[in-house]
Length: 317
Ligand SMILES: Cc1ncc(COP(=O)(O)O)c(C=O)c1O
Image (cartoon, rainbow, N blue to C red; front, side, top):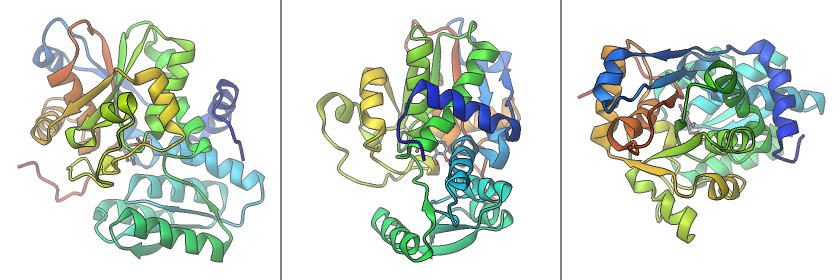
């Protein structure tokens, strides 16, 4: 497997995965522009319409292709949802068995998604410790290749295709990119590529307020909890991975935006009702960053709508 995050590896990942992925749409809405105000024109990259309903398919597919090249017996991961679905899809696509360790409280729609792609599901307790230890034991027993959800070189290199597409599609129309940050895989991928190719485009990391990522990136102080209590279930992991940390420090240290739970809900409502896009709360987080906290000089932000996997019985209250 690749061991480095480099532009060369990112280009190679883009080439090897593009034939199997959607080049997702970039859309806009006059109504949303009015709501954001200040003459802002917001662009949305529709990763909720990506294979498996999130950007995760990008890195997962890159990981699966590389694992197959190395004759892996199968793939395994721990995930509460999108990573598991993406890996199950990618493994099925390239013909490898797949096991996902899933916390008991994971959203039903995401568990069903993993099953649909024929993954073997093993339940664990809803804590980081339980996820990691059950997954580590099974990895050893099955001798599968374990794909970490965010602290993983092949995932980070693979995700960069979203940034290549953004540059191709609207690179000359945007001044910034806003994305939701959990473990930091998507964030470090986009920040690294944009920082190398288009440093004039600012990359903002949008977090649930309790995450305290600025305090970590600027002062080295870690978030005191390991799981966040937020409706944005894709970013409940409180701390960014060690591989992501130096990249985020280099490119995004002053670019962290904190959002409150009510703001995420409002952002979700607006996108569901005005744009008719059924995104999940984690995608609304990035939009809420623009809606409520956009720095005044930003006029043409692109929001990555990172996922659309939401339970059908989900209602915003
Ligand atoms: C929809 C969605 N958005 C964002 C993230 C956060 O990604 P990362 O952990 O790479 O920061 C996840 C993670 O699972 C996700 O599922």
